[in-house]
Each structure stands twice: as structure tokens, then as C-alpha cells.
Length: 135
Image (cartoon, rainbow, N blue to C red; front, side, top):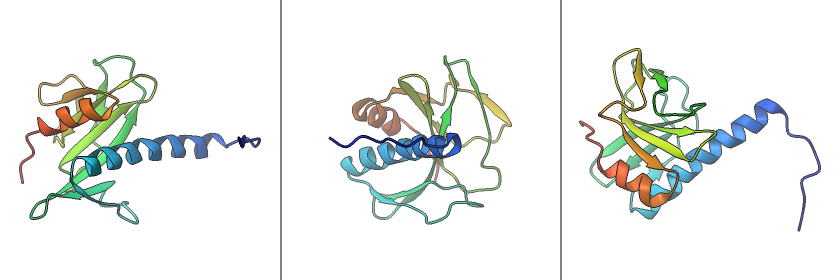
């Protein structure tokens, strides 16, 4: 079995981890029947994933947070964009959160509109299907 024998730079390692979370969401949504589109560049639009069920399209932002519990505050990083939903992953734990894009500067992960999930397909999709995203 091949082994990686080189050091990965810290910034590169974090980018790889962040992208792996996006890839998990892509896989889970595709397995659920969604069409998933990946923008070549999301700067300015802040859209990591664009999904469609055919007639409808939704913009999703995927974020990682260094949170140890659900009392963690998250910042609004998508002002003046058209993001519909944000998927947060706790980097150092086994949970995440699906949240509608919000207008406040900050919000707690455990806000009533947010849906917590374990980092697996079944739990994520259950939380995702409970989202009330306005189109």
C-alpha cells in the first residue's frame, strides 16, 4: 500500500480537510437524487455547491468550525449573496449543522432554526430535509 512520505503544509492541509467536507455533502446529496453543480470559483458569490431537483436551484455554503459544543457562535460570512443554506461541520468532533442563511451578524449553532446532525449520510439527510428554505 502506498504511503505519503512528504509533509503537507499547514495551509494546504486545512484546505484539503475543508474540501473533503464539501465532497461528503456532494456525495450525500447525489445519493439522495439531487443534481449537484460545483462552481469553478465561488469568490464573491460564496456558493460552494449549487443543487437542483429539476425546476428549483439552491445555493449551499459549506463551513467548518472549531467548536467543541453546540453553544458555539457562527458568523454571517455571506452578506449580500444569495446563499440559501449553510452546512457547518465541527472539525474536531462528529457532528454538524444545517442552517438557513441568516441576516444577523452572529448566531448560535443551537439556534432553533438550525438542524444538528451526526457526520453520516442518514443523519445529514434527515436534517437537510427538515430545512425550511424560502425560494
